[in-house]
Image 1 (tube, rainbow, N blue to C red):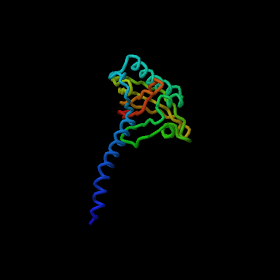
Image 2: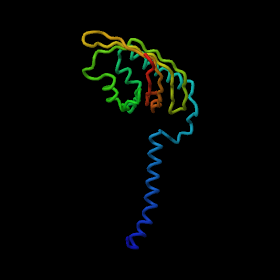
Image 3: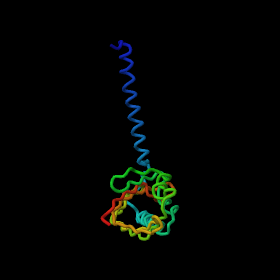
Image 4: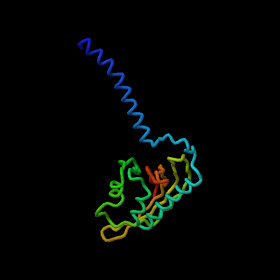
Amino acid sequence: MIARPARRAVRRFLPRALRHLLGVAILGLACSLGWTANSECEATLSPQDATAIRGVMEVYRTSWLRGDAKGVLDTFTSDAVLLPAHGAKPVVGTAAITKYWWPAGGPPTKITKLDITIEGLEGDCRVAYVHGKDDVAWTMEEKGATKAYGHPGTYLNVLRKLPDGSWRIARHMWDDGTP
């Protein structure tokens, strides 16, 4: 049994600790979601932001077709997360994305086709999401032979507006259709 003075101390401390913990949790959530007190934020995407986001999608597409890994990576935030098809484990951050898509010692691979449609584009002045269909084809060198692969799919990208006003992909999720 806890002594009476100790019980009083626990009762006085616990509410204060819970209030502090709740405050820290709310602050952490607000920061992680990018909330600010900026009352000038529009509730919908501006035409300029929509155009910029379409531009990011096009740079992503053309960088893959050029074999430009840096160009692809530059379309992502440094803390971006890939959510691969079929429930594969998330890939978090630029270093992990690089290892995932361009593994050291991996077979030579070339993207030969990447068609991306934008079927939906919405958001506000801080966060946007774009989704649609993609159709990708690539070749790989395997045991001295070039083999071709490809499939259609669907994707969902969540983009974040950076302090410099540029948009970058923060989350990229896809699934593969039937080849």
